[in-house]
Length: 298
Ligand SMILES: N[C@@H](CCC[C@H](N)C(=O)O)C(=O)O
Image 1: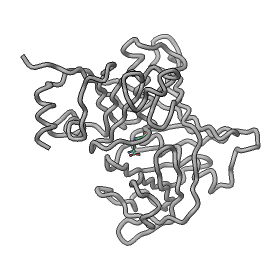
Image 2 (image 1 turned 90 degrees about the horizontal axis):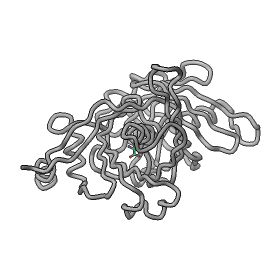
Image 3 (image 1 turned 30 degrees about the horizontal axis):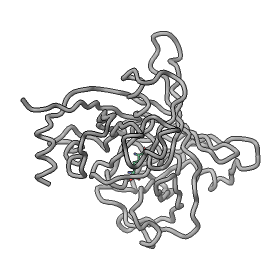
Image 4 (image 1 turned 180 degrees about the vertical axis):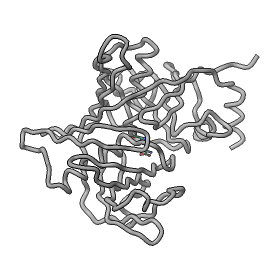
């Protein structure tokens, strides 16, 4: 009888993930096996994988074990590794709650971008839907330098924002101008993003309210990107002449994505909080033989 590996499927504003609970870091997840799991026709299908490992059991997180028991070993759908995934942290927290490993309230999560602090809210009332999850995402870095993003014959200046992972934020007149986003949008200069970039296209919806589409590095166009929404909120605030630093007043933007809505607040100390839903939709078992063969056939 073939061995089985437990998995769950979850999403945050429709940025979807295969969740692989593996406290002791015993499951071999090569780039090829991750890509096979995320394949929407031959696999389970997802934008990425959340490998749930105890920090003490993973070489990339052992140094964080005193601060956070759990490590989100995040992989993009193509098998590549990214520093951070904002929606992923919310879904990761929801999984730990679902599994009875943590309760509502505060939860530190180790990531390759450092320890992020999540807060799982209580439902609004008895029998109400699950409460949202808020994640302290750290500060945005805004490297100087002109960046240009293009789609077909159109091109736009983009703001370079780093949320632990790289983003290029372009304000456009119409989200349809981003086209079908099947391929990564070209950017220049190439030196701006030596490791690739997530590209956000943004339009205004009202005061401190924007809508966006995103082409994610390693995943293609997705229905939501949490780090991308934070990058967009900061870029929109600076464009609007708003910087909470030193003012004592936080700045909040509502960011609409194809898969839902996120609320992003930048505090006077620069810390960015992202709030949104996180949902576990299914659980099942993966045939370990299939997974091993997927890794070998790549
Ligand atoms: N969807 C994520 C971002 C995942 C990583 C990204 N594709 C990258 O390579 O940097 C989010 O919600 O932040």
